Image (cartoon, rainbow, N blue to C red; front, side, top):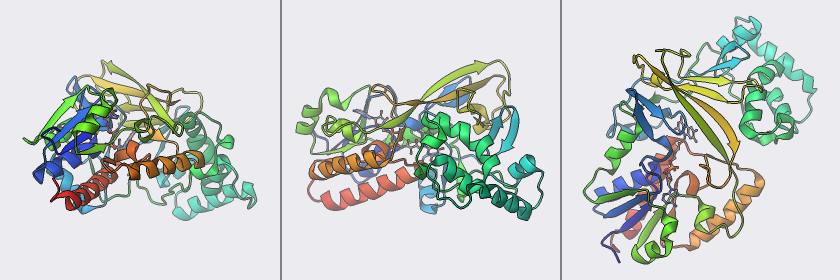
Length: 375
Ligand SMILES: Cc1cc2nc3c(=O)[nH]c(=O)nc-3n(C[C@H](O)[C@H](O)[C@H](O)COP(=O)(O)OP(=O)(O)OC[C@H]3O[C@@H](n4cnc5c(N)ncnc54)[C@H](O)[C@@H]3O)c2cc1C
């Protein structure tokens, strides 16, 4: 047995919040991370003085004042407000769908006119119950928004035509009848000044926490299980059980980054390419997250792809088959008393950052309550 109370597998947000809180309560922890760096998917790296979001653009947002206060102890946040734009064959539209979008699409000026236009376009379905994603989207926002802003983008995201995709993928499509380009409805929003990696570094900076990167749990699973009284595992739940019931499915992403010799490439942090022909889904210009004034710029093109072993599993595919399979793995996990499963991969669920922090805080509190005397 080691001198540690916990082994944390994964130095992402879930593992790091858990480690921070447990160390504050006097527990000794070892954190292992298979990548060569901490912070998981929120990892940022400074290049040319610009914080580059290496695993996709990350904007922190929450309406929960407790979560907002919580993150302030690790970073100061800037006042970035996410206002992505869509580029459809060179036509530019504001997102999320709002009065600016409708004015550009149809020339309408009042919310009433916009609403009437959407209602009129929904009628093509003649009241038919949507049977696929295409019909679902049209039933929510009409044909023009679907054709120009949803169809191509969604097809690229899922690698399948929208009339072949199930309707449940789009449950609702927020339509905002105000001239408001703020993507999120949340009360608080921003990006940590100095990057997310520095924020996570601060979480893990405690004398009771030892961090080792470049270490894969599965290289030594039996040894860890024998040595550590408690383990928090934030990797893929199906991998933990050696895929014994089958593989869960994920969507993955491929990123292509370039340093460009211009100070402003696209005038916005996030531009979605919503046509089907452009092979990437969006282009991120990282400096605009920080209002950067550097002479150069860095852009990243984001391509969506089918997950294959070895790829980073970015998005769980929560269809019936996978949800059912996950349920069976979760039942096995519940029998594994020594190991706590957490985070987006442990729970096979898409979590935003504020949600993963809330989940980690809830988990560590429960754990410390249950095990405070035993360890
Ligand atoms: C493209 C994209 C964009 C996003 N944008 C936003 C956004 O704008 N706002 C927002 O709030 N959220 C966003 N999110 C969600 C955000 O990334 C997650 O909430 C957060 O990263 C989840 O943290 P986690 O600790 O659960 O997982 P992770 O960050 O994946 O951490 C798990 C860690 O475990 C490690 N690991 C796995 N297996 C092993 C093993 N066998 N041994 C050792 N280590 C292992 C992994 O390498 C990883 O570092 C986005 C997600 C994606 C994919």
